Length: 411
Figure 1 (cartoon, rainbow, N blue to C red):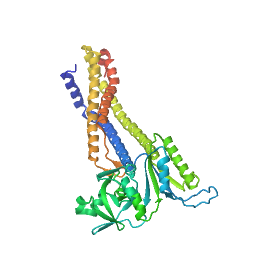
Figure 2 (spheres, rainbow, N blue to C red):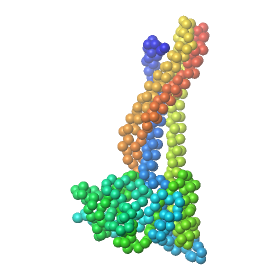
Figure 3 (cartoon, rainbow, N blue to C red):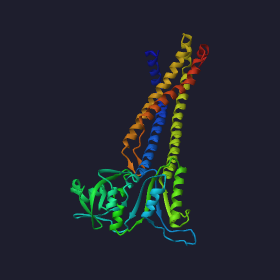
Figure 4 (spheres, one colour):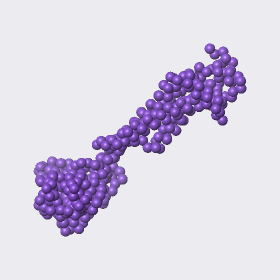
């Protein structure tokens, strides 16, 4: 058992060598401090990255048209490709991996919203009901566009909470059910939404049933984009789904399926996996740097304990001559090493977590909420305790092997 006398002896030894103990402890504290800060910063970058993808489903596929750049079946380049409602129905009914799907009809002019004396310019997105799932929209009150709105071509709109506050101001509590003018045409507000990614462009937007927009804004059956989520488990399946869609649309519109200018696509699943692999590399790099810093501190502790053993050679010899067992000598050196390492490590841990808490409210575009979880803090502390024991083990073994007669001859 570790008695009070040994506690007093260790504390006395530490007091006699204050500067050496402080410098040794600082190296350990700095190591764990840097590990926590690096891991917290890495988490902040990862949170910022995840938030960028929160504005849309991670398995979404976006498709838009352009002009042909490759001759095909006797047709020259520069031919415009245009989506219609038939393309939406084609993909909806024939793509097996499809989960949610929506067309999009864009209005390139006006975009003026008016309520009483308030007139502002906001984005108008004309979509199908399933677009809510593709964009991960959070409906805070009311509802989103539904199938009846499409069938009856209802003049209804879903607006963001930002648009509500700007347009209705003091009347915001009565906004639901009220009418606003969209490019001079009255639409009833049936719901409010928020964007998970906190993207201001997405928040400066309203949604209108696509069939209504095509009717009142002279769109005919025209679509400018088609977006969907696809049920895939890996990159290969995602690319296969995209290739199938390109082939299907190329056959309908008579263009080369490899013509990237005729048909543009963005596969968020592929982009997400690529970014995840980048962050896995960053996480590994952070761990290597952090653990390397801790090891440097632990090596410092080991070197200091070697010096301690050398300085106390005569004392250890006298102890052994008086009957001290090798275990008692080893435990004395080991406990001193563990005590310094654990105390210094705890200080570094507290300072690191405290600094992360100070910056936890950071809300930058690609950096958000840097933090180190409780499990990580406990693991780091246990790592330090084990490392402290290992750091003192070699010097302790050396002390245990000292022969009393040789120790008494030591100068």
